[in-house]
Length: 114
Image (cartoon, rainbow, N blue to C red; front, side, top):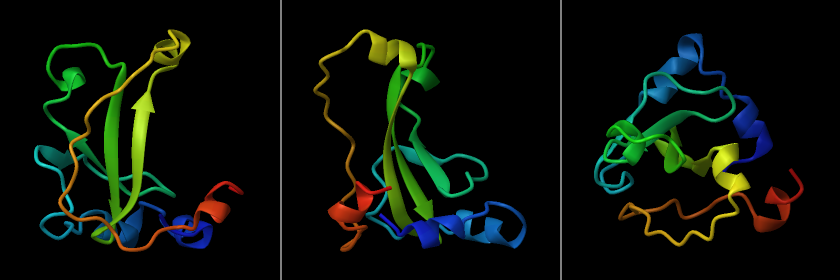
């Protein structure tokens, strides 16, 4: 949802760690999602659903992550294992959605050039 230049500025180290811990405004976080410690360079802070199977005694196959930086949503990420993809699953699943979303994001044309 951000430009490559903005993404490259996310180091997730030193002083930049402050930007990882900025909590998003109410409404931008789906119910049950919590931040993981730290963050990932070029991505930001990962917010996960603690009710997801992988946190409740089940193996990890797939999950949905929301990403924030500086308190703003900067990415959404369906995360899956290779083993899950190799089964060629046909998946339709309801996602936990926030009440609010950013009003602008990286244009579709630019996203596909990355």
